[in-house]
Image 1: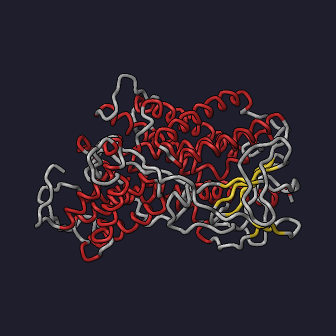
Image 2 (image 1 turned 135 degrees about the horizontal axis):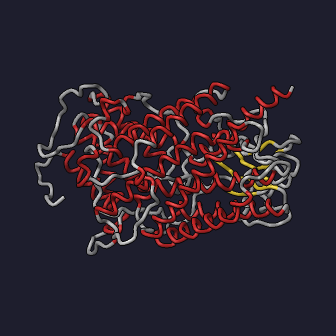
Image 3 (image 1 turned 30 degrees about the horizontal axis):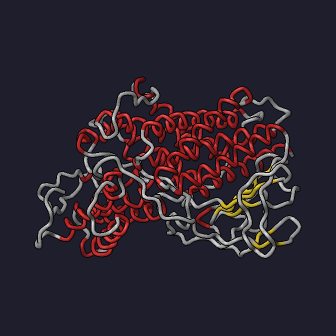
Length: 555
């Protein structure tokens, strides 16, 4: 970016510079710029609007390596903003353009290059597009665009360093999990899960023992090459443990049973969650500002939710041995540290995502504490006329708490029974098949209660941060010295809490949702972006199948 574009510079090159500068304005470096004619946020949005309008969404300018880089940069920008659903759509566009250019073929045909100095590796660009598509699809519970599993072929891996091999093989594993999630759960699905678990264990052994040591940032400075390598190692570890949670989450809520497979899933989820939280805390103590840690932040939220739900479920099974009992206090201390870090990030960055994540986890911690003591809890309920009066406070007098999740429904957590899913006439079974429900929620007595509309989150859109000048990863790992790896962000729509005073239903139920945000809503409308939807849908679909299978065996 040292050479400013001239009047004869190709518009794609101009767009690339605009996108890179827009991403820079998201970073702490951008906040330190003085003397600009307008606020950073205004310039950033104007640059993005121009680049996307005239180049990245203009088919007439597609077909060159540089235009594909521009689309990938647009995806990074949306990820840094926390708009996962928009980023997912951008990477789908990138994949379509890449396939039209032939990047998915072997060998790759000759490609058009506008900039003679551009040394981007097309094969590695294709890998990053597929990697991001599967990463975001896992987070959002959406289908993958390509089921090609050649990323982990020996012919591809032979020239890769260990970390490159690890990432490519995890990408193939992610594809298998996405395929499993798109099929109906059955006995064969459990066998598939076991097979994938064995493959993950095999992949973990290709990395040297030193790779798995805890993150250590002592003596390092933000932005240094040594720090970048440590962050890359930590991010790869977190992705591995995150995939483990995604793999076993459908079977986690039946860990205390006679079925050793279900117990293995619960133990795996709990241990993977602890590993993620330890790494999240270490990195966020070292650097609470970087948006390169968005993936780690997101998996920390998933890990905390998983760990808390495992403990809540364990308290219900009083007749069985609670294998989490001796770890409960240390786990709560770990979760308290996680919340402290989230609150620091929220205060420093005015970050809506971490703010809402911290509030959600704080409430789940209160629920777990009450469940451990055997007492009851509640939040305030909505009024019959649909006014939203819930403030998320926890009171020791009610029976349950409900979480409103767009496109999925209502998740109700109570202490009266196991964490489970109650069947309703039109219960939503898959997120992408979810019908848009009316503004009422069916109850067991066929009455209906009006729900509050999903409102926009107050405050300005948070601007995540990037440590250094952003570089789209277009080179293989062997050439990473000058190219910072940008990982995916995380995000989600606010789970609006409110209480229903009906104590007679089971712990977690899903019902058709009220008014929902648009499918491409940004974080101002949908803070968690559907990550909450994917998490609970995966959790409850597996629970429903196991309940049905065990019922059939008992009859």
